[in-house]
Image (cartoon, rainbow, N blue to C red; front, side):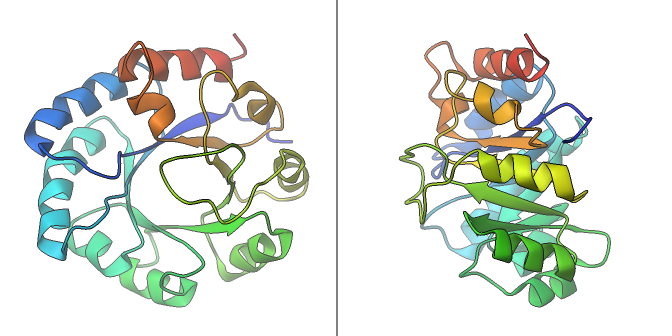
Length: 211
């Protein structure tokens, strides 16, 4: 089991209509507690539109020491100055993602509920593996439902970090934290929190810190 504390991995909402205004919401959230990573995951935008949003959000995160990953698109991640890319099983193959992002970039891989896919990703050099969904989620259609035991199994055997994703909120995250998982990937659980995103980040950090 990991001896390092669990950290927060933020995922943007699927649509950001006014990025120049929304970056203030992001900044307030990032200033409210430890955040390791921001994944920019946007739906139904062309490359130029994605790049424009990245250009607004990326500096706010990187100034705070938060790694910025782009979902699905290794080529665009490199072109827009992101720190890495997150790929699913239906996206670019790992080798293609690594070639695009370079040897020092971050490549994370979705592994759903599969131990086999996770071990394959680790062997190929993935910087982290992501398991989920653990809970029902409206952000993305989940390919599988996953049990927390897979996080405990991975954390007990491997040094490559693992990420839990899918429907995670401040109300349901504690059993996941207790498995030794390295990161909790959260989208709606922060942006739709009743007290607002900043309060959500603070509460996640309190729970992950053992509070």
